[in-house]
Length: 81
Image (cartoon, rainbow, N blue to C red):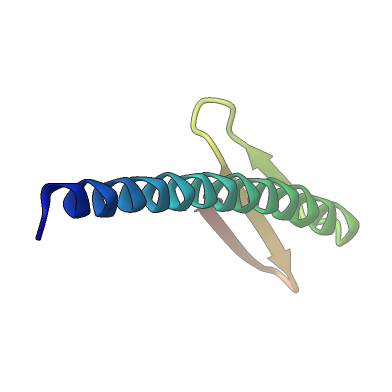
C-alpha cells in the first residue's frame, strides 16, 4: 500500500471516530436525562401512595423507604443511578 492510501484510510477512520464519539456523548446525555426524569417520577409515585422517603443530600441518589403495612415494617435503602 502506498503512503497516500494509508493516510487517506487514517483520515477516514479519524472522521468515523469523531462521529462515534459525538453519538456516544449524545446518548449519554439522553440517558442521564431519562434517569433524572425517572427519579422524579418515582418520588412522585411514592408521595401519591403515601410512602415516606428520604433523599440523602450527602450521597447522590440514595433513597430510604420506610414501609409499614398491616403491622409489618420494612426499611429499604437504595441508590438510583
